[in-house]
Image (cartoon, rainbow over all chains, first blue to last red; front, side, top):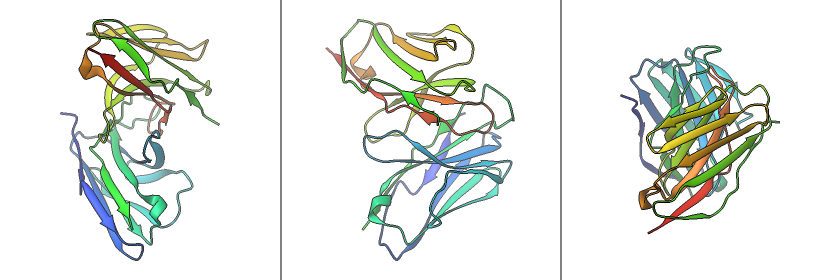
Length: 116
Length: 111
């Protein structure tokens, strides 16, 4: 089973709202990722969690706040977003063993976010 | 800076023919190479991964890697209309590292 689940599927929020995106995997993976994908562009890495610790932050604005409560769950807290933040937010997971070349990332279905 | 280059297409191929997709990358420290298929409005779906120089075959798909030339390719044999999608080449350093994606090649299989 290579399933990564994400909720909600769609989210519409105003610029003053606070919302959260959720991601879950039960494959025993120890690395989890958030990517952002704008229309007709490739996915861009935002954050990486390795063994529940934030290991990579690709200079993402503080209005995006990641959280990894346990090895199976990954959240992305959103606050005071801008319309240009509207995108498909993708979660992925992988085994995450350091130096392990065969570290395939499996993607969830994504959350389509619209900021009004 | 890590860069992954792909021809954005569209690449139009007749049904039953071989589709050839290419990708080059700049980071010589790259260890892992992936091809993802993405249908419009959907998330990327893993098609193939390759780590060693040479060819790797899986059904109708063959991935080829040449680290000296920093080149990765994907061949799709007996192309079907359902293969019409955007194909993303992704490169990583292995372990818990993010992937760098190319812009994707839009493939159209013409019935």
